[in-house]
Amino acid sequence: MSGRWRVLGAAIAVVVGGSALLAHDGPPFPIVTDRRTGAYLVSVWTDPDATDDGSAGGQFWVQLQLAGADGSLPAATRATLAVRPIVRTAPMVSARTEPVRGDVSNQFAAVVMDHEGRFAVEVTIDGPAGPATVAAEVDATYDLRPPPFMLAIYALPFLLAGVLWIRLLVKRRTG
Image (tube, rainbow, N blue to C red; front, side):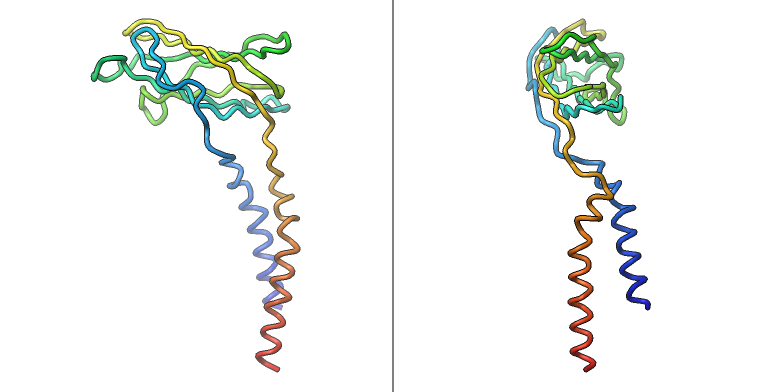
């Protein structure tokens, strides 16, 4: 009887722990790398997930440095991120970036990308060193990972085969 409780406990742990697996679906990738614009050296990294539920799945990291200077970036430096679909007519969606863990040189923003397809991305930087703008394009795609309960269903045959194999080994040893 205790073996069944262990299997049940393991299955529950897989289903409940599956939500932690949703925290990462692949690394962000660069769409702008060390582009000099205005007084800044700018890199933009993204994980452009499209969503149907209105959640901000399009994630963007803006990395800033002062171009040609070894000084630190002024604390008041902020960027505004704007995305607009290229293929169809839709309003531009924008968000103000926020420093990641208080680091002004690494800023983050998330926006709603409501469909798959090509998006124009524009980052406008404003700070004591002056304004600057950088533009790029990115393809938004839906996150194709299965939901956590499906992972549990997919794992079930392997768990059952493991349980049967262990029972067979125990039966041979005792018999």
